[in-house]
Image (cartoon, rainbow, N blue to C red):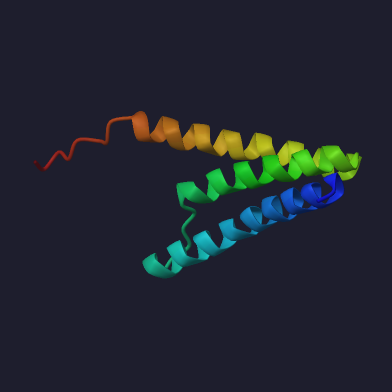
Length: 96
């Protein structure tokens, strides 16, 4: 197996994971009957994006590198916001 074939497999794996996040989001939305973006969507975005970024770096594609790099910042930031929100205590119900 050549190095090129291995990198193609890595690239397709990253793209597959990146695409799979939409399937996860769609299923979560259908279950709630409203638009939902589960935390797994952001993890799949980050991991798939980083794998795809590695492939783009290997291919030396500056457009692809720039797009995946910027996306990574957005995915990390969303995960930080989700983490922060889950650490805040839920408001106390005044009628209790």
